[in-house]
Image 1: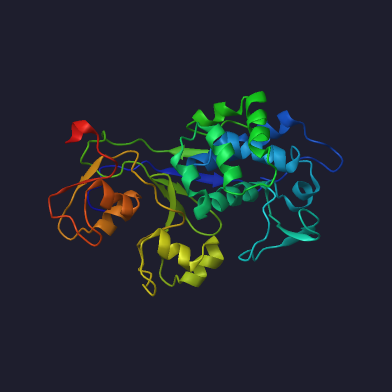
Image 2 (image 1 turned 45 degrees about the vertical axis):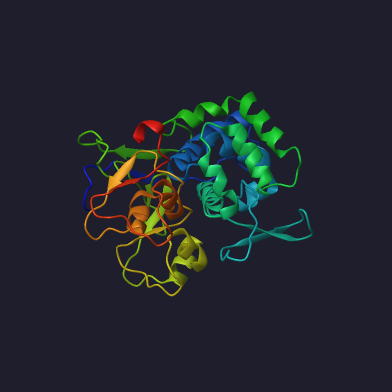
Length: 327
């Protein structure tokens, strides 16, 4: 792709044996739980942007350190219910109502991955991803505000677990720690240094059983392949057509073009690695929005453009709010 100086490729392989290792009748301690699943939490943080401390604290709280019936029998560590789109196995138990439907996973890792996708693909949690990933208190209160849990003390419970177990240290990690469940990572060096007018330097690649996913500006996406339809993406990735259209600024009825980027969660309000982009021939504001993972409405605002107005060739398009020194 034009303008790219370098990529950072992170190939991630998850082991099929990533299942709950506690034997029947044997209870996990909290320390056991942290040691076993911290690699999953950090890996998902690097992919989705959900702080590892929050993921671990929620897993600990929702699953009773991995010892709850739901965690043991359904490998569901976050109490995620079926909802309308779930087509996998189901587990019924009493919760807020009698006989509620919960998702069943093949492995605990699948539960962790679905948790981060659950948060990153729903608009009501979008504001959380504007917070720093080290702001676990902001995330804890934001989850309650967005309706993740009904317990009024939910934020305090998460914060207490994080602080008592020093889980915030995982939020600063740049690669997963070693744990009882292995996660392999291979990293290729970046060629050259970033310059203000270079394109996006970092792009992570994740292989899943469903589709190879990528990460750009901390936003998860896939590339359209031949034969893809909105229905097939919904079945494969649990993302509805209206979400695909909304996240990617596509008009209703727009075809899926092989090779194009399809974001699976809302784009960010700014690019965290680039300040601006110089417009080349044929580039539109939507193209720039997709290229850098920045919401198109933010680009209109930062560059004082009217709705539908396109920047001229050679113009500097800001990818974040300008500072006084930029004028």
